[in-house]
Length: 178
Image (tube, rainbow, N blue to C red):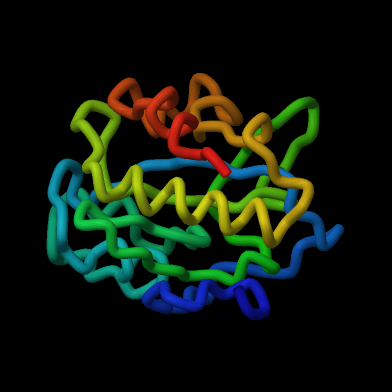
């Protein structure tokens, strides 16, 4: 990492970020995304996070017009790693959220999106890249550890369900062997 940017990720900068108020990274949030839902390998996630999603490309995109969201990373089905926001900055991935009694999880977490849905199994390549990235983040941000990794569903229960039942937490944690 250099200035919070992963050295081998494809960089696709988002305008949807700001400074972390405490300059703290102490949590990691796993999400999923696909645009349109259940469709993979398309450019629409980049468009959403960059604020230039073509709302005419799919009827479901109309509800996303004007939405200002981002994540630090996206791991595509084929294992491609994309970075939108420096890990040193606050990406807008969690929304209204609470982790261990602390609100505004964007302030202190890194958001990683997996291209997928709550119900489709994630690809082997995604687990491999996610585990490698996680270990690199552990090395870069000493407050991060396995016990501080959660799903979006854990910080926004009742509002969010991702990464869903299809995400194999045991498999992922088993890959975090240092």
